[in-house]
Image 1 (cartoon, rainbow over the protein chains, first blue to last red):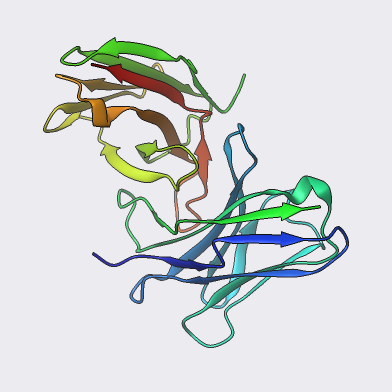
Image 2: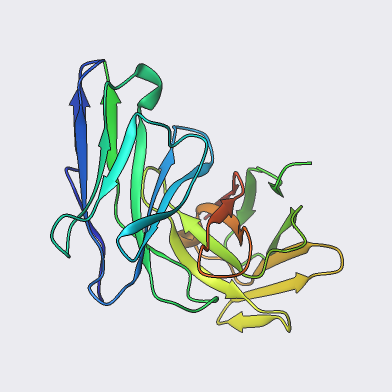
Length: 114
Length: 112
């Protein structure tokens, strides 16, 4: 079964540092997403990406965050100047068109900011 | 009103029991509805989409009531492996930007 791959599985970084979270979506999917889940809280939408540009972003996704699809297969989330409250699981997801397909999620990157 | 509201539980049931989860959503423009399952510290996995006419997949039955903005999930003959958090998820609006709005989840523990 096709899967979304995320690396690294766990990232520890010092406050103020920049991190890049990497994702390889399913190859024939057209829509890509980043979500995050702070421990014990609900999954939150960060950003959606389609046709090589951001199609929607949440209020969480401020100037500290950016996304890129540099080479047609990878989809990255960059967090600049990390804060303690950025500690969370970050999930990448991709989907085909169609209203009832749902998403396929990667296994996530656990980001710990110390 | 919360966008997607679920009873957090936990629901503790014996093996073989039937258990039902409910969910309400606030955005009447939502077009697609899903139940996801999440094991502890793992990614959410799609359990089933929810269709207007209701749908069944083995031991799982999902129902949607658009008028009441209410979604349900019924699990029959529960197994130990059904222990997880069940997340009610709706789309923010129709179209290509299918942002998902998530409930906090309902925790289920199936006991031997």
